[in-house]
Image (tube, helix red, strand yellow):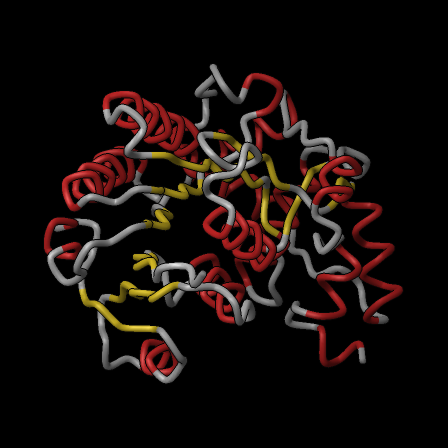
Amino acid sequence: MTTPTRRLVVTGATGKQGGALITALLSKPTASFEIYALTRNASSPSAQRLASKPNVHLIEGNFSDPTAIFKQVKEPWGLFSVTNPMDHVKEEKEGKAMTAAAVQAGVRHIVFTGTDRGVNSETDETTVPHFASKFHIEKDIEQKAKQSNGKLTYTFLRPVAFFDNMTNDFMGKAFVSMWKLNGEDHKLQMIATSDIGKVAAEAFLNAESGEYRNQAVALAGDDLSPREAAKVFKEVTGQELPTTFSFVGVLLKWLLHKQLGLMFNWFKSDGFTVDVPELKRKHPFLKDFRAWLETESAWAKKSQ
């Protein structure tokens, strides 16, 4: 008996998480999905690369008008929702509007990428504004699922900090600088965004299973300190871990207090609490820092 084709709307399709989800789904030859990749500009090179892939259709739109997005897809079954954290008020408003439009269009399963919030992820919005906005979006999805009498289900993915923030440019060096301000031996849990996409694919492929139906999944691939990261980086690349002056980190935390300052302070005072070894038993493909450096980072080719 063949599985009916399900139409899936993917936000952030030309970004890291949405793109990783599409790649993961396309790697499953038995997956019966028609993927509708949301992009602001369907003629952009990144969008056109997506359009060349099998079972991928481009739709233009953005979070400011989600109803228009779903008008382009007949009988959508799923939604992958990833929101922009730079303005937490706008993020919450647009995230909830996207959910409402999905429900109105008849979507049956939503995978939403939020964030881990430590030991009290289920109940604590934290002091970090864009953690709180994601918390409120989750609660809105939960409420809509309850009101649907089983017609709507969801999976919440709760990743920690991203390896991908470590880049060989100003912002990448500044990230490491801010991280080091918390102490050379203070650990931070991190994950590759590509692995978020892989777990998102599993959530859609197994939406009816107890592991993903109306469940939250915390995601982390490693738990390491700046000192440990520098050691691994040196072993893999032969170089020092790119960073910048500590005062630059202090200044950025002050200038972008809501987006960065409060978050890095929370990393030190509370922090993520994912059971990484247990998670890797369930998802052995999750990369640690070394594997990410060797395969996906900006230094991957140089280290080979």
